[in-house]
Image (cartoon, rainbow, N blue to C red; front, side, top):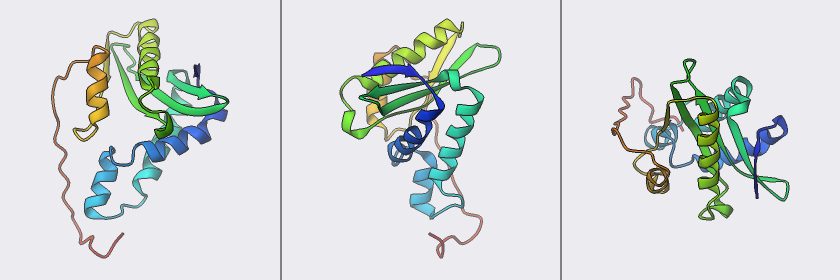
Length: 161
């Protein structure tokens, strides 16, 4: 397994991993589970965001590859002032989890941020992402706050889904 810099040919496999990997740990996924489908769906919105990140800041994406197959990735965004680096997305293929690949991706992302002169690194996770909550402190991240997300339907959504 190697961690390599993102190339455009990685994108289709990264998008596939993203659709699977964020199910259950995406705010938009959880909203749709509770209130019904939102047009466009959570996966399409997430994939659009990732495509835009790949166009805007491709040098901040690192890919775990094994035998030519993309098995994970991490995406970093850096503020204009370079004071804050944010790990925006990270997914490891379910078949390869608990093998240290996520840790290697985080280490590479942190190395990249240091190379760029970033002052602080940030990552966010939901309370139901137990794997993330266990992993991030091991890399030196410190919890600073918890956030609550509220949603309110403005129209009847019972017929949708």
